Length: 486
Image 1 (tube, rainbow, N blue to C red):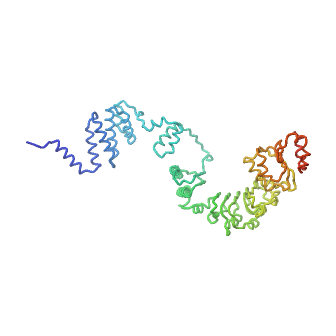
Image 2: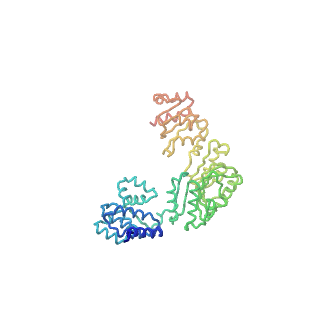
Image 3: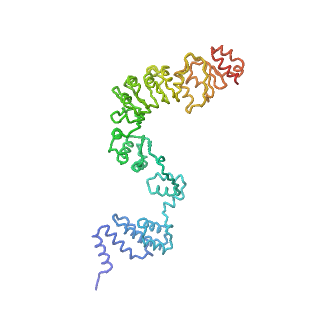
């Protein structure tokens, strides 16, 4: 009599054999066994088995597809059509030509377009502004959101190369918390594909700038060697540069890293040390320069260089400098092609740098001058003037009080009356404080103020008497003639 149960012996043998196999081999045995399991009545067993199977790493993709297909058939038999559709869609994602899936779809009377992924179904219910927010999420949701937003794309192709973008500007705040890591990564990945890029401007922290420079140097279309610093990058491109803009208070002008003779535009804001050769280099070799802007901490004395090279920079078009007015005036003399002249000087430094009416000595020789700053224009007023009326044709774009403050350095010291027309100013006190602190009488449009606003009857009938009483006889013509014109 056989006392051993054959089923127990078989189960033990299977356990002993599978115990000698690897996880991938065990998964293969499990998948082979599941193929003999009926689709109906064993959903829980199938779910647990497939879940264990999918957790094994290293399983071939073909076996994964077979497992998902088995689970889909079991779910369909149990009536779980939505979850079965997800399994079928996963199989089609890895193998679009899978015949077993197509046969299952046909036998179950399904349509392939019915196999919509669940994230798509949820995103369809979101408003458009939420979909735009999902575009910035580093997840598959961003791809689905882009498909839902950009359903219609209108492309216009042109053969004109003038419409191609050749410049890139990047502005980033300090990102210590790395909240812009995803956006920065997208930017870095796109830089090698910008084959038409000719100019790049980056404003941000040192980590971002160095990262972008390393990426730009690694691309072929820039034709530069690998670089790890901004100074090296400028040096490698010295023969191709036409414009240089550096604004850093701690920087010295990189004379040894650039070729000034090739540059047409220089805009530098930094430090000019005692032994600096910046002005000598620019004035002696900058034959192609059209625009020069220099500002910053001045420790050297370059006025001698300006006087020595009075005929330098023959193509110069624009000048903006904050120092050395007399030397620069001599430097600019007889530049008949100059169109713009700006001198920006702090009020406390006028005497130190000799900023006074002598700066106007250069203006008669600038026959093509079209643009003049207010702080220079006010020097046209003779210092003996006591009554002045200004009529502005077009109000300046900036704050009018700032405009008036720029007039302060050249206001005649004996001025007692100021009149303004077409000046949209609300506060007369601000006019006095900002630009005309010595005047006794102010007229704005049709109103007149001394220490208080004049009543209409005084303006209309007793102007001359009051002007004489206030010592503003020189303003009688300005005020009385204005009334007669009305």
